[in-house]
Picture 1: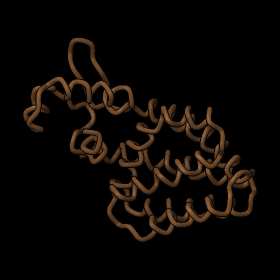
Picture 2: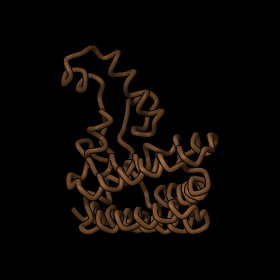
Picture 3: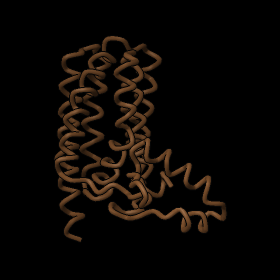
Length: 202
């Protein structure tokens, strides 16, 4: 179900019915209901008391709030990572960056982009910060899907921005790393708004 939502097979505003999902997967409604509650806690669906579940329909206000939080938190996490990262961890980021360059499938791009950002947060070595970003992870992933799938050229821009972030981390320049991370997230925000407008015109 999570993969189906991220891939766009279930569109924003779509109602999800336990009985239909249970029939599709050939199982009883109980595990389906439990799975939907897990997805609700993760932010992939909205639980409507007495009415079931709904794929969230995002407003521009929702997107702005998310990206304001993401810019502040990930910017700081990137600054911390630049100061705390080890050579082995730099190699991990370099490998993820190279994999991002080599892949064309947009679903795999989203997965690799998520992993790149999540690793930077992990390497910040700030557990409380990581926990705060964990609660936003589902929503961040869903917006990345929109921008990479709907916008030509965003993949190459994103790769270039990742390179700039990584170069700053390699230099152990926390201030530069934070600036590059914030610039990347602002670009992502602008692309997400454009992707939303494109989707609304379909």
